[in-house]
Image (cartoon, rainbow over the protein chains, first blue to last red):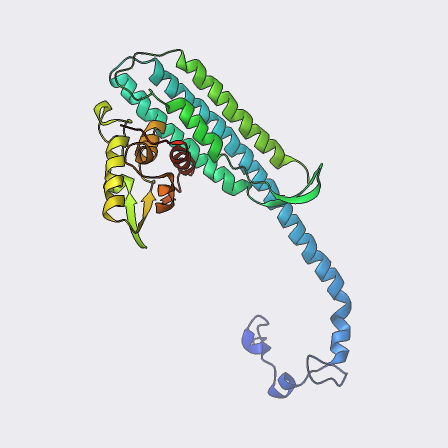
Length: 199
Length: 109
């Protein structure tokens, strides 16, 4: 005779009489009785504390990941601003012809990419934080909004007579482009510094 | 008020050019005339301008296309209220357009 396999679920089916009635010695009849509540009630604080700890650690991890992503995006924005400035400098310095047209198109394209990265930066950095200031504590939105600075930067790089085919080569404008880039990156760093201030 | 959609990439050009027509194709001046025509033909319309899908705008193009409406086409600065802009890729274009219209002054011929 083969012994019954303990892993076979068919062997685990309880008789109908036992299935309807609890087999313990006490005489409670249903799950919600006060006696049973009393059994597991002391476990609630520890379960709640564990849940809170899990949520807290999750929030910390999420925030750390967000900060990491923000710093990476910041580095990309700096690199993009560099590339856009280089392209603009080439366009200002180039003589009339295909080289200048290529540099002009590249400048506009790179500036658009930079604007897209800044839009992403704004979304990632958005959120309300508690801040202490000289006017007192306040809850402020710390998002890094750079639309105005981006607009000014574009105006400096591609303002008149940037695309005028009749203009001569203007290599001195490259210096102005570098200055505009400096002002733009300074504004970005100030906003990032405000963002990373401790709560 | 009726609504009109105008996509610059689809209904004008995906590669916006310089400021004036004599400087190259797809200029800001050409877009300005197109927008002025729309505004005059549909005086009660709100124009929803989609700025996405192009290879990038120069500052002078935007200034001519929108600021030029006040400078040369006889519109008041309140023409800004007849536009709604959408620029998911680079929202700074909208700031630039608003500033162009706000600082534009009519040119007397």
